[in-house]
Image (cartoon, rainbow, N blue to C red):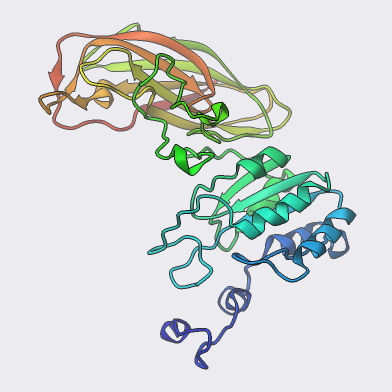
Length: 356
């Protein structure tokens, strides 16, 4: 069957002609966002229109989209790319390189017309890559990066849209605005005095990412407070960092607390913020929990000028926040003792969550 389905679209042995037909045959229980919304609110409450295909416009597609949008109270735009090794309309996948890091032109042209109608728009981005979407992000009321959500993805997306589930994901990558910003990543070297500054571009608003590493919003708000940490730690020791996290919003939620360390002065250039620990914390409304990190200094090991993997003494900065840019707590500690060589680096810290 796999061999049959790898044949060209013109082959008489192919048992399906479209992606939709493929899903119906092999994944009969799989539903689309449209179908889940219809089940949630009723078919008579959901308008739907296909504005374009992946790489080209559909005759009358934009006009049908505009007609639906004009009748709607809220617009849910499902956008993005297609992952496949063999589909000619694939935008990503194994053996599929793509110089375009954004949405394809037909989708952007369609969304330009949608935004002109001044209806509230929620944009759903489905893709296997971290797509750059500055135009969509600027004009949408909300943007949900859904990646490749698989067979149950539609239910998960609608659960977020309706508030049945509170989003808590954080970006494991940095998303840029323009191709020329690449490479852009959180653990960059300190080329500027301010550690939050990026390379300078002619357009001054282009010197920062669209979304930084670790970014992700929630329907509730979290308060970080009462930071405590060791003032000194030996090169072969462990740093203890404690803080309290409180849900100060209106609904229960989960936050991913992120711990970064910066080596202020070292024998070789080190990252402006090195992620050394993170933990997901679930909190009810007004609930507070204590988070305690234990960071082995082997995490701060690096290769010196002699290519030895070492831990050096010196001043360090510690940052705790909701993303690499949204820092809520910070302090300074010092690694003391002799410079040591370590055979094996440690890559994650221990963490403990305690009820208050």
